[in-house]
Amino acid sequence: MADHRMADPAGWDWLDGAPATATGGDPAPSFARCFAGPDGARVLGTLTAMTLERTLGPDASDAALRDLEGQRRLVALILALTARGQGA
Image (cartoon, rainbow, N blue to C red; front, side):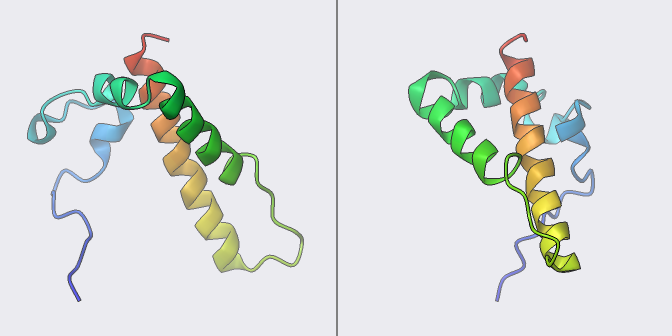
């Protein structure tokens, strides 16, 4: 099975606003264009509901909590990049 992890030695720093020369510069405008319009708003709303607005019960395993927290972090980054690309 192929390894789908990022091979880029720069890692994920470009998501935090660092220049991303290997990916063509600041990704925020691309995120803003991608999620513009009613379809983009629906996708962002669905991702938010599935992650940021979701809670787990007291019987949730450590693995489930870590998985959801990772999903939340990714959605938060998508929302932040989209907002920055829109000039918000």
